[in-house]
Image (tube, rainbow, N blue to C red; front, side, top):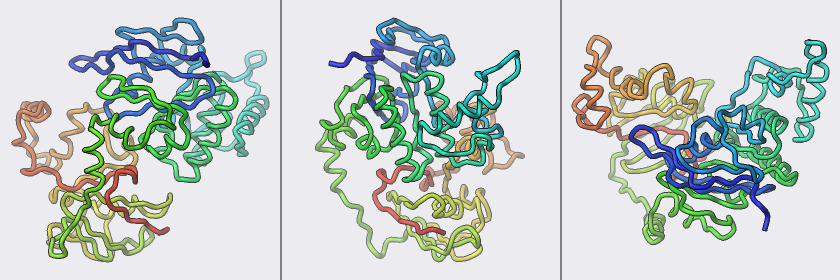
Amino acid sequence: MTEAILTMSGISKQFPGVKALSEVDFRLLPGEVHALMGENGAGKSTLIKVLTGVYGIDRGDIVLDGRPVRFSGPLQAQHAGVSTVYQEINLCPNLSVAENIFIGREPRLFGHIRWSLVRRRAAELLRRLELDIDVSATLGTYSLAVQQMVAIARAIDISARVLILDEPTSSLDAGEVRQLFRVMRQLKDEGIAILFVTHFLDQVYEIADRITVLRNGRRVGEFPTAELTLIDLVGKMIGKELEVLERLEDRPKRFRESDVPLVDARELGRKGAVAPFSLTIHKGEVVGLAGLLGSGRTEVARLLYGADRADHGQLSVDGEPVTMRGPRTAMAKDIAFCSENRRTEGLIEELTVRENIVLAMQATRGWTRPIPAAARTSWWTGTSRRWTSGRPTRTRWCATSPAATSRRCCWPAG
């Protein structure tokens, strides 16, 4: 049996009022892709941050290559051979590809950076990943998939032993995912151990050798991918019995023709953004928009929410015609929007979690009628909902996995 390159035993981590991890065991073998699975809040990110030294450990042991380790930060983890490529790529888009790969580690001679050597070594690294690009070009001019490859090249050059990929495919199209998986298989063949975190279950079965499932901060189990069916994996992730899941899977959503759609778009469109389209959504229904990158999925969602104004067609909500003049109109109709780029369009990172949550509520009241601090606190703790708009939000637009949909709409380009 192959000896594990990384072993985590009895890992526990607690934050004020929250036990994020409880006695979690995890092991990673050299030359394997190991998927770490679980719902949001299951503890995946916390386990990764504990491993890489972002968080300290309350209890437990980490053994790397047979030696006990406890990292004080990501830099120390990298020097020991553990690197992470996060979902939001932590590179500098205004610098060149070569500069991003060697930033902070530039080869020098008599105090001067040897730029020719930097570019040559960067090109060699990328050729190893079968990526032929101009390493002198600005990183921001390349696609997100190429930027992922550059981040991976930097990670394996720093420490080519354990590579953690945290949601690397979340913003990639199908072709870019295939390119990433080809690189992952190549690294696996070179003996690099890869910890793969994703919410796309089909990708797990395509690339992973083994699966570890977390639920509510606890380890459910470790399974060979070939021996765990998809329905069993989902059951272990959410804690539902197999029979319950099968009943839910087999239950169709049926609507009578007389039912008034909650949202009804007729020939809605915007010149230069998305061609006229029609779409109906009923209460209690999940509708997925499927299509390739650039096909118009995001533009459709922005039109329905009012983030962009339609110049063609008609939109009705609850059977009443609505002119979406902007997000304020959508919020008044209980339509919420979860943007694709949370950092630049969905959140204000300088504000607290509570302030971000009540921001939309404040917008519906106007700045002349601020929500009192006591009411904001009571709403946050769940003891009062008297400052909400009067009824729960019924419709949400989110960038999500096609696997989560009950009905799909495939969008052609444009």
